[in-house]
Length: 336
Image (cartoon, rainbow, N blue to C red):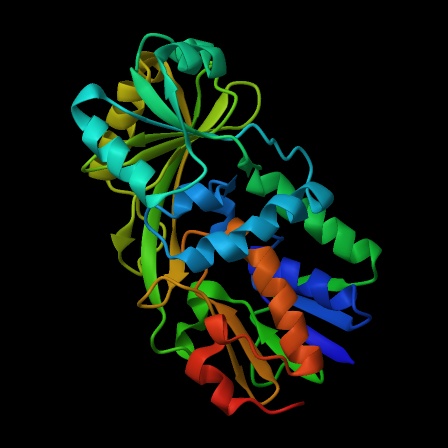
């Protein structure tokens, strides 16, 4: 069987791998000049945090997201499994308690335990939540590593190709174009996210830290050699690229509240892109003839992609039905 996957973001590459591992001949078409350049995966935080995400997501995100914790250490370099830390300033501690009620597997830690987990934050917070089983990765290293693995397995990845879903070759086509698929998915919407990358060698954090805040919740994800990603806004907009001064001020203010050292950080990069989402912020697999759409990963791309890729391969090859992600769209199915 020959399958064309359109889109070389995290959804497209994981789906291509799931298919080729089952003996399918796979072609990947990507509109960007190279892997990851034109996808919102480039600006992802890379947090593999299913239990933290339950604070604002449905149980399905936890159920599917847990697969990512086993998947990514096998396929990406430098996956760091040191958990996630959630903090709040004293006036916002009621919001931290609400966060704890909406999530699971978070251990309440006091100031002394916080100092052991993150010495550079010692004395700054009275309490926090530690999710010991979570992990994180660098998307800009993970995607090229996944592409290289696909090429070693014989998958051709053609970049700079603005492919048409209707005219793509193959017995089946898997559409993983993200927000670009709004031309054929009318109920797909864009949620804009803005972020910045800073160099701040004055502080050392060993795991993602989330700061609960009533107006602009923040996450800080350590990369390497004093580099941190600070994110991210959530704006109902399909506009790509433009970063507002207000968003940057809010992100920097929140980072300063986490630790004053961020006031002296060097800004390395500012970026934004559009996360594809359905009205309920849950992912979908939809099949229409030989085309299967994999979309709506919202802010959970690296977390949900492994499970959705497995499901997509089952749908293409076995005509499987997953009601939790297929819904009414599967009524249009037909075997290629």
